[in-house]
Image (cartoon, rainbow, N blue to C red; front, side, top):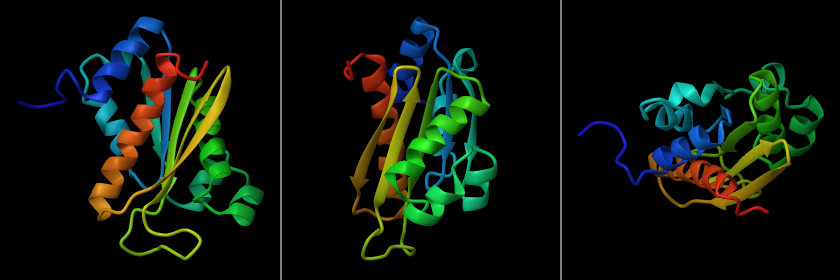
Length: 165
């Protein structure tokens, strides 16, 4: 069998997005396009998914998805504020109702005492607000990326079912 099964998060959020008529854009850093890949594995995703940006470098975060240089200098690429600005920036540039973002340290290198390997922020921006969640995974690079993609899709799912009201 190819593609996600019926219980996969990407299938569920796809159905919810389709029913609600909402559109989605994604800005990804440490997941390198994995969230967008999972979303587009669902047949019919073109009805709600407008596109994604892999904003890996700080320059891309600033120039393309409108993360402020001040945010990057003061808080770094792996921070709550950067994740929030990535989500709202991609929502703005791709003219969607929902923006979703992921930024973090996938590993095995790149971690520090303040920002260890496995630290990830996922964010969602929508007309009624924005939400950010912090996660700390303890897997290898692939596991950290996969868990981060799951966390982003789970955040989107919870938003779409109204659990943030």
